[in-house]
Image (cartoon, rainbow, N blue to C red; front, side, top):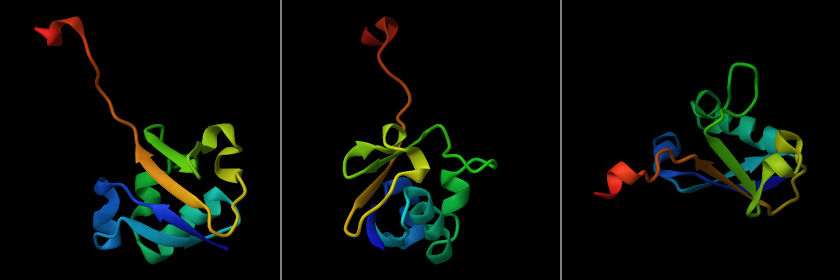
Length: 98
């Protein structure tokens, strides 16, 4: 089944600049792994060598974090939206407030 994947700016070089692409799969993992066939380089950016998502990659299915919804095995329905969101590092510290 076809789902829409929202691609963050750092990965758009893989999609020719497209901010949204279509993917096929019945689970989140199938859809994300399937991106590699159309857009080589996605697997290396999204997945660890063992197959899990890299710790700094967050994925949302219809605005719900997949980590609480079955992870890569979370089921997809036609028309679902997946959003790939890289984690943002940093933050506020008292020293930086000056």
